[in-house]
Image (cartoon, rainbow, N blue to C red; front, top):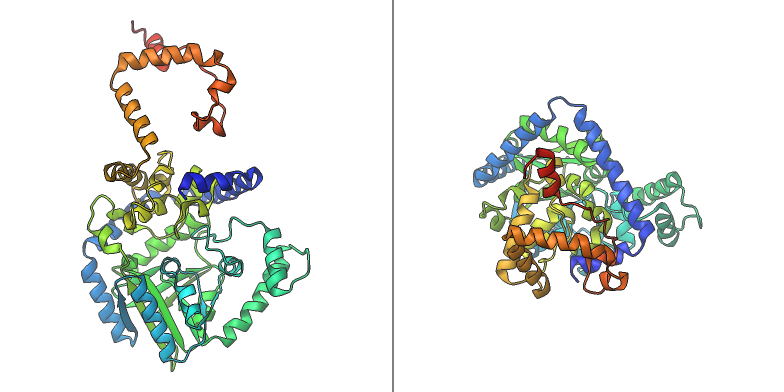
Length: 455
């Protein structure tokens, strides 16, 4: 199903749509307050943009430097060209160590590779330890947001889920009670785990170590108790130097959740005593994006979710309407880069308000990319004939100013007196869930000329 069809399902529940919108805007406002608290905010963004741009232009060198320094620390490094190879490498590591159950911190890469179902099919129990991730895992749902995976659920939904799977009190939706129940449940899993898996927020070429940012400490606990730690990262997670890290940590949490810094910023530069640490470096289509100068900046993304929190489309259509592991504006450019035919509708899930580009901490040109993606969709012939013809007609009209002025004049005269049944017919899809605004007496051009005294 296309984005409009899935969005319509989400928007059918008006109450849910409104609180989803409100909850995400609350996070956006927190982000704004934090950004305004730093006089050097724009300087940080500019510096992060330059670091990421430089790194991507020398990515092969930094990846090799990272591998060399990681190996020197006793870390085992693996390379995966795609999701299939990534999953096979992880399974092989687990099997060679006799692991039957792993605890996993949040990792969008493993979601992208569909690692959980793959391991479960091969007899490995996977426990997501981020609270939001665990909630959706129990419900057999994917995350609906890259930072707030259960944002689409209310506390009552969580209470019902925990009643079923954790035997909590019926009808008790108190967040403190539910959090304590989840903590007790997850502690047993941590203690009994054979291996731990984490994502990677930043991989430092200079040191050969990785950094993981969390608010719950689940990555720390998971990586500290078992003797086996597997970290999975996309090739774009590299930054050159340790001193570069401070730029990104000051931007990440402020952009993601509106807090000065994540509660835990954990550095891993080797295995626990007597243990093993493995890093799996994954391409999975990233090299294709790297080779296209129009979309290369999408690889600068640090997965903060700021573009989702600000996007008027995402806030009102929900994460599942995108049909891709990463929703929102960043997903709307990454998904078509992977499969344009399958995700042809996502570049149009955008009002081109440029809010996503304005809030991105590393200055990814998201709105520009989505505009270009639309052209790719048209050139590939994937746009529906109705929409394609409508756009061609609009282009033809807009290229003829006098005719457009006349059409506007007639619309202002005729539309207000048309019968409602005719105006809001099946041909007016825009009016299906919206009311047309009152038509003004004069056009903007007429008002402008009058104000400037132009005849």
